[in-house]
Length: 169
Length: 426
Image (tube, rainbow over all chains, first blue to last red; front, side):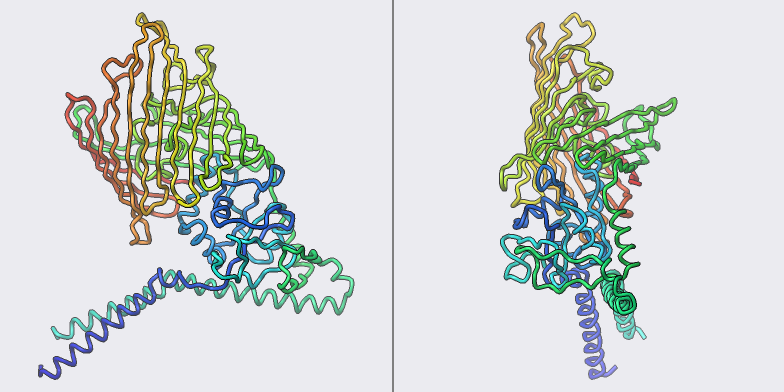
């Protein structure tokens, strides 16, 4: 093989390796899963006596460590089914868990007699709003573009969706 | 040909990489896009159908839900929801009814495990054994009252024994006060109330020696009344358990289910903190006080027991860290002889980022010391190291392999062993 051919060969190999690594990096789960979109609002049944929670308080509610809004009003947790973006945000920002860890967490929580049931799974926004309005004490997470009247949007760390430094996105 | 080989290999890896790129994340994204598209289309169909019906039957719309007037704190800018088709509305209401709480609402979950062990200890056979088959019951009786139960089926040489491990009825007043009655896992330290009997829940194959089931170092079970709840403490995240019960029965590994064997009640208090700023951290202290009465013993058959314990744990898995210490103080009421028994363990694990986070290597060191003058316990001395790996086969089943090196009495030889377990929940 001539020196020119050898140089060409090296360039082709380098090119292929560059494309290989670039494609693997671009498609790595870590990058694919960190895409940021619109804010996710924390919404509650309109009769819930709360308007502002810190992120750690939202976490406490979602972890089942706070189970009552007041002594007469239990918290009802609603969460979207897997593949919904709202669920991804809740798991990443609030629970800081993978899907598997989230499932295991609730199995263990109920097994410890710390909660009687896991969050209720909702499959669409319509279903979510239906439950939010029907169940006193319900709390759910909604894409801020899909907020509808009849529910209360909570401030998180003093901020509403769309405001700077809103934590759930 | 030899020089083309790296290019071919490169192309194959590239193709593999491209194929890999089409897997989990891409599929999830596609599913999400398709779901959003389906939702949009469903909404559009609903709108069109509603318009058609509204034109044909003007009164039908009256049955559709009217959105409540937004309060000042409520969303105002959002558009009103599209009125739903009558059939769709009926379906939606049916779904809502299904998800509304019903009482009693019994949930059953099971846990099981199968084990294999081999050691170089003389007189101990290697082989398989069936671990506990564990059934857990949880049933909300109202939004304030819940029942929890746990039954185990344990393999014995001549058959199986059934044991009621926990049977608790709890009344929740609010987050600060929950009162329950029944048989518990004693809230001393962390492990005993975090993992219970399901081996799948814990990282390792077995519990630390100080809180093993059937052991005597710490009273694992407690029969009585228990109050628990959060303590208003801001970011400190304080919580408590406080209980009164029968205490140790006879044998002392059991909690006197059929009645106390003296007129003295045991009490337990556990205070722990989960700081809001350090999500995953828990630290706490526990105390337990009891009077133990044994069958007639010439050297005195009554003892005062005082257990003090502390724990600090980091419950996330990258890394996981658990550490507990307990001191068990016994005082012979007749002779005033006092002994102190100590035990602790430190366990570390780390969920590896590769292979879809299914692997978790771990290490545990544990130490138990009982003095020669101890009158209540038999000798429980132990120095043990465990190195192992947990592989999560699915979200609900795992395989664990461990190497253990332990020594019991100072004069006894060190023992090496390999232990394997598959455990699951169903």
